[in-house]
Image (cartoon, rainbow, N blue to C red):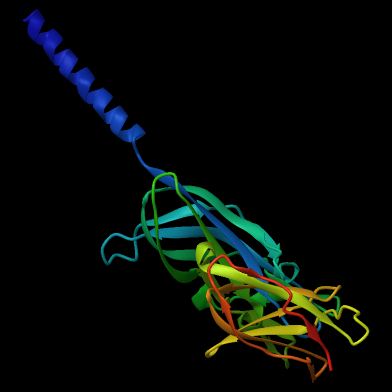
Length: 264
């Protein structure tokens, strides 16, 4: 009887050790999300977006209602107008189980606002958006792999003004891209005297898709784009630039510089 008892204890210990070993062998990678802005034209000085939480959906069959994993629940307010020309804010840096993921969901808080001519206005979120903004992005994380994503907030398309009430509505529009599939195009916009021109608009057009940025105080710009073929142009104060760069081929992880413009 004693031998049988010792045998059962040994078997039980082996089962526990096996379970512990299996749990320790869970394979994980990491997800990093950085965010930036496609700029807003007009007399807007700040756009503060209140991001309450970010979740990622682990794809399991056709189920899109369960499988959501919170990757950050830290309420974060970001001034997106500061995030242009390559400036970014870190939004997520989280460990995730290896597997396939299909969506990102951002839930907005109640403290988003816009500052126009020194006056702060609440950015009201329509009731249909309160459950969060869902973005499709299919990717797989392997063990010990780091997946890096860019989240581009399109302020121009996201914010609507109701002139009669002097109120602003927020219907967030984001573009999500994988860093390994993107590259950059940069340069400078100047006057004829070679003075850098601030707040000039620089456009990258590919088919029906158009991405815009504004030059900084010294006239420099940087566009973060998916790999593709683009026409690059610039304008300021209703005037065009001296040149148009057509059919610029941007490969993944390229850094194309010196696409410069002189305003006519």
